[in-house]
Length: 327
Image 1 (cartoon, rainbow, N blue to C red):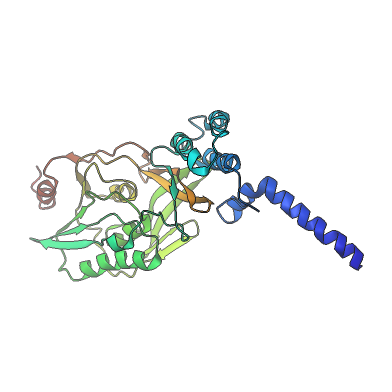
Image 2: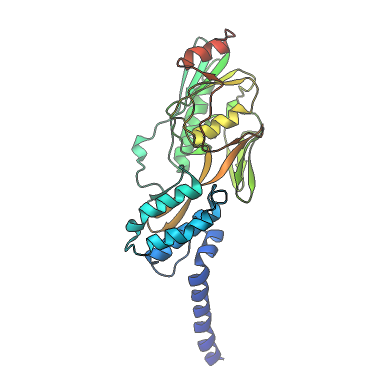
């Protein structure tokens, strides 16, 4: 029996190693959302795995026939000595598969972008003027649960202190995006229950829903401590050419409701859903994997979203609209 074990155990270890060597990328992506390696991958293997992920999940991979581009990228990368040497070509590739919203980035051990600085985080502000509440939503890059909760609570608590307004302005100007859940959570009082929008990926469609202050999609659930609803009020949204990414997604969610108007300039045009896929050590793919479909069936992607009212005086025109004096 002992002899059999001495034979079987090494054989099993060898077979497991062989399976991981051959299929570690696929197994890892389906289980832990990143490739599995037994040892440091070569630059060529690193690049091939990155290209495989781009082609499998990139939102534009099929329509751009990315699979036909992969051999050319591999050939060019073949003579690169280090990962850093391969990055310029991989960044060219990821734009083809995922669009301009995608890039190869460096992350820390918590998979946070290495350029992120928590000390620079800013939180929502609420201002009341002549019966109109204005909520200013800044960009928000943190994925930390406590930070997300603070962003949401800052908004909800400030709104709770107001007398009931006659209308609301949501200011998304200079909001370059970040954490989608934080922004949706901060605006739960303005969103109606039901489906807010869909993520439309290559192989599936995922609805994002709100039900009794709970935001949910796939296996993600976020409950917001909120007792207010302002969905019966006129809601104006202010945008400019820096309104991007998650801020555009929030805009899409709000645009699906009655008595909502947007004012200002066209947005930046990054309305795609992005996921982070770790590669090896500090390298990761920030890859756009889905377009956004509003509840009116409009499909949004990397095109600027035009406001209902194009104006160089969005605050003034929004207030006129809310009070019934349309520009």
